[in-house]
Image (cartoon, rainbow, N blue to C red; front, side, top):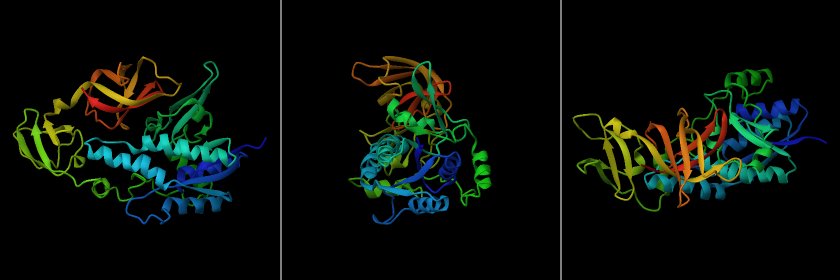
Length: 353
């Protein structure tokens, strides 16, 4: 039986090498690309990612399919992103894009087009555990590029249809191989921006897209003492020290964004440390989340995992308690749970306690 795979093409080096590798291995390959809503462009303007992907598919001699996901992407990712920031939270859009778009809409479309698997250039690894009879998602070998943190919303069905051929290699090896394959994108720079923010200016997007104008408010100490004014909670992040526009006898950091009172709360560095938080939107890759899970929790993409216990509470939220206090736990971000290299699941951080 002929092996048919859909490669999620972006026109970058990772997806292009992935497609070239699979062609060489004898797979029947076609490209598939999401047409997403992009800030600062006309609705009908074709994004660079789509045109670049088409060029690479033509270069490789494979079919290219484009999925118009502009509206569903705006509703599920961009609108969520804007609202969370306006409430004084710091969302991770990749988590919700992976859940609702890439590994939902895009995967289903790939299967409809005849693929048995969807393949991406992500740096993560899918393995099948014969003894446990389940699929597992593991960290990518290259710790500087590992993308498993934003993939905790997977389930067994999704994992059964995914392949990540680059997960067991380093980015330097990817570029070397791309040059050996004579791919024109071998030296193309990695994109560091959020895909729908080509200029990286999320404050401008929020100001333009939020329902009402940003409300100024107070910058205060935990005692309530007013030290200055802010021009919108979304302009601040937990742990921020510079750019606060206030003067004080000791260094101050943003330790909390109070959406209800519309206040930026500042304090000393030690005020950023806590070991307990409440989470929502949790998911376990094996199915139902256990009532209690002991694992290593990772509270942001670049953080080191730390031992913790996650418990489901009576109100169906999740309490996570770390053995050691963590610095700058940020509502809106995610916590991912690991057992060594294996990703177990994750959740969205709702409150810091």
